[in-house]
Length: 362
Image (tube, rainbow, N blue to C red; front, side, top):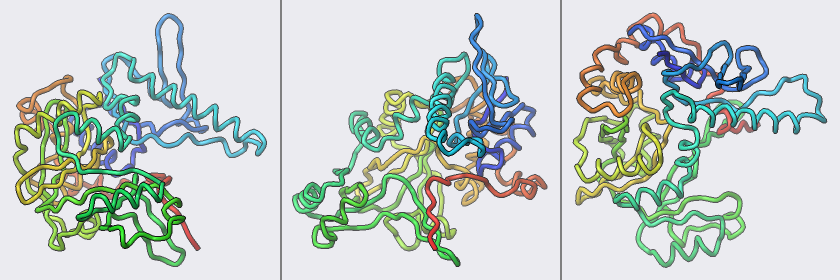
């Protein structure tokens, strides 16, 4: 068995995890996604059996494939301008053929590409969360000025506005701006036309005591409370400045049951979920990221050992229990071990990570 990770080998999670897996004796193959260069070429062969080659790596029965962050297909720069649209379409369809095929092969796929595309829909997330028994804030997703005004006026109370996905604007000469959740009421709305510039998510504001980041590992969940001194609506900005305190927290039994039901409906076995906890102790589902950043939890609290838990989950048989994960986690180096190793300085800066979510302005 080898571990196949679909991401650049210097991705901010792939680098440390590849190092830790190899330290524990596992073979790891990283493939960043389809492209014209030799390392990013791929082949599917149907000749009585089905064989898949991703660059120099063959995908074989019993392998574990983590679809971490495959890049958008990269065209050969020499393609003629008149042919680019055709080539882009062919690369796109071939890339989908590769990614969807993984879910049908005799490998363990985390998560199947079909499931990851399905659950990345914000509307699907809220619907499945509600039907699985979780508390979900009242929500409108729209680019209709009338719908936005009606939602905010009829709801009253406190509401927020947030983007569907993160985005960063970089200004020439320095300085950045990032998408951030903010409070909004009907009296603060801009002109109708502005509301059509980009769709957004408008939502009942949960007045919270703290946030929770939950990590789903198969049939097990681990929850971590997030506390920041500013009490900000969106803790991510404070997290980037090192101002968030991370603590392990027990997951209420009914919440864990609802999350596992949600995961089964979605067809996923891994992801990072965000909850807001109100003054009455109620857990409100906000969203899930099935790609799931999690190593930052270890950076803020080295005692939680999320890196080791994830690797124990990744290398265990499907459906491994909490007990098995925790028994096996000591087989792997920790995040602290990685930070103390020479390998940390050998991993170059990330390339092409999150590029579709960055705008550069003069």
